[in-house]
Length: 192
Image (cartoon, rainbow, N blue to C red; front, side, top):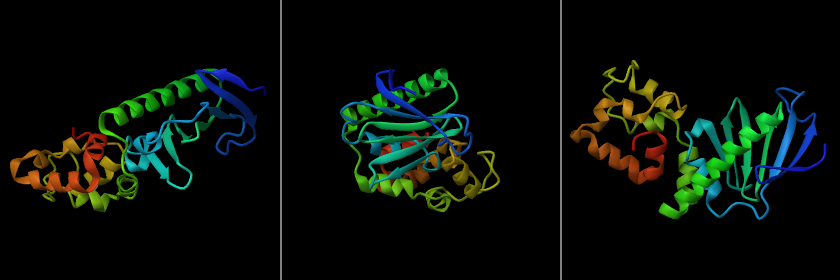
């Protein structure tokens, strides 16, 4: 298939590389000039750790969305599999919106530190559990704080669902979390 321009990206298509559905095409889209410094790291912090994987050595992030993996590289390359031109346009619109939001976030808060991104990427349910009140009260709808932690990190639940966490006596727990992982992490987990 011939390269073309879609949604402002130079796009090339190929067949036979999509593992889940070999009838889909592999899309390689390029933004000339690449993405601004910090966009990849900001994208990695914009999703729960189970929804995005950060690769420092490749300056890339893989995002799980639309029942597929979408690779976004600092060089301006975006890769994913699609079954139709409508799907290609929809995914490129989605990624373009993510990049615009990340760029705006960088203007407001600056680029995140690599250490912040790597700590976030390694966050496990047990790590998050350490920042919960550990009451197992069930107010969130889960039977244990550990169950809530797992669902928060998978993107199924919000940190705000933990009612005791907003009580004044638990403010220090939240501040410890903020010191360790930053404001962006709290926002991604829907606290702020």
